[in-house]
Image (tube, rainbow, N blue to C red; front, side, top):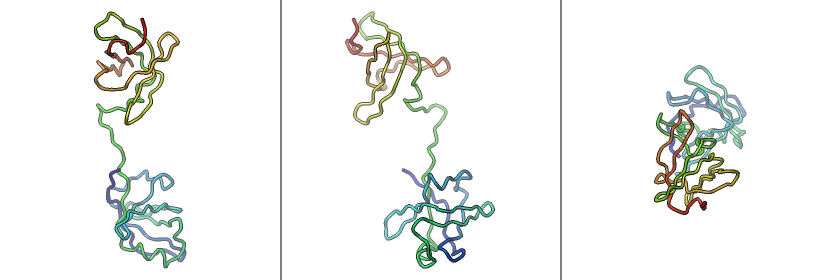
Length: 173
């Protein structure tokens, strides 16, 4: 997970462990404190700080309080630290996830044969070792390795995919 510098913890605010933050330009406008922690480095360890309270103060400031830091003394240890946030995933126009293909019509052929079948991509099973497409063909579900070598073309406009598979992989005669 890549992180980006997003701000600095400046000073105490109030008497119950709240702090003032300076936000950098990289800090997202749509920051969701329930989903994303602020990350600080303490004694060479990356420590997530989950916000119990987060209130923006203008464009470049915020007030925050963190879970388990309910006293000024504990919050003082954070003063001056820069915090980071996880860099949001950005997909280019030509990038997609294989699960985006669920529901696409599939035409599959077995290399070296005249066998062609039509079906629907009904599921995708993600695995580092063996990602699989589940294709429904005439009411029967067939698992096919989800590898680039088998995908001949994908038409996103028409929601279709053409596969060229090794002979016998579909198990159909």
